[in-house]
Length: 254
Length: 321
Image (cartoon, rainbow over all chains, first blue to last red; front, side, top):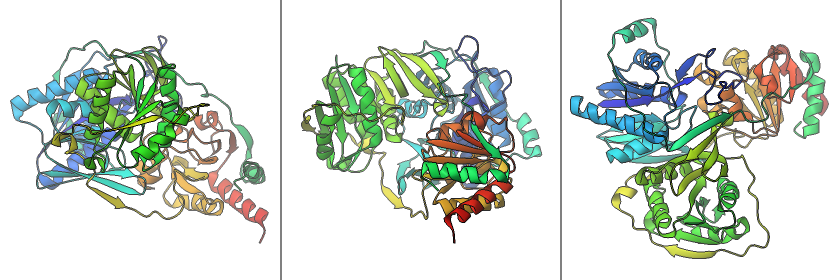
């Protein structure tokens, strides 16, 4: 089966949120980058499905040219080829993002055929807009199931499991379909050195879509109050135990 | 074009807490204009009757046997029908899994922008949550009606004084097979032993500093004594030391215990997004400069393999034989 996984490059934020001077972005000069966590599991899930059923995994990202790093990471994790929709690094709103992905899927269908399964993360770590996968599904006229913690494919159907209080809800949809997954659906493998070397040779196609005017227009970012309080140190080492228990008593939990 | 339409989630006659919180923001957005509720599925009428206290003036209950099982597309159809007949200025839902999902379907079908997980609305400008709440964004919504969901646990479910019971009207939405194609077809129950992470009054949690899966034994012991749940950070689940169901964080469980004990957890924003709802946080860390100390209320500095057993022993001693 042909599977597409859409991923996003996000910074590894560490312990504090620091903004750029204009307050419109995170200061990332001293930060590393990664694949947004849910999508990292999306790549792993797609690779496992192809290992089981045969086929090919394509990874797509919309992001700055540097996002090729996350595409290569996905190729090292077992994906076969990449598509990079390169932006100038500016913010794309969910509608613009979905439109660019849709155009890429349609171009791909003409060139290489359609995808039987399109995988998104349930929401990106940074924007958290919860909607790009659903928008793409509607535009393609495909069924979409979100927030998956379990996925299996058999006989042209996908069995999709969501974690809900007290158990799991199951949805069964015919392929082709769109799914959005959550971290915990699997434990992504750690790529081997040979896999990383092979990833350098795998094909990555690039194009530069035009960014439409945003309809959810980010004006500025704000660090919420409460960051930067200082803990009361109860002590050092095991000698602090009586003070800890005293604190627990005061809270009524001991 | 006035008033606010709000999707209210309910389980039978019980209204979901996150929907009650969303009503607080919905009233604010309505600014005195009517707040109109949409309820879908069994128990809708009974649940709707409770909403007067939360400022709902009228409620529409979608009734169709095919709505018994959750179907996001069908719920979206219900919302779109009311949105187009009532012409509200905004359509609101809770920032729950289903709330965000249904609103996304509405937005996709009508090509409207949707601002998820808002904490504040001022005209066409919203404040919304990014990075699991460790960062906020101010954004302008270019579309009418404004489609919004309300960030969970950022505001109280406040009641209003002297409110009447809402007028309740049932309606039968025009559902097509396509809207019902994706629906819950089966529920698999799982029985979990012990205290659940989400409901525990105390959570004893470990991070990279615990060192190994075996290292959690001393945390388990302390948790057992306190009737607490055991949690962990993302690095622990990524390393395979604990199952993902134990993860506290932006991509794990978001918790609000009375006390959160963070052992060997540095305090990445990904983790803080999951535990910032705790009333009090105790950090046990060998590094007095760790970021967790700027989110914690109390700290003990030192080796957790000595400190955690010492707390366990002290608790036992205090309780007597």
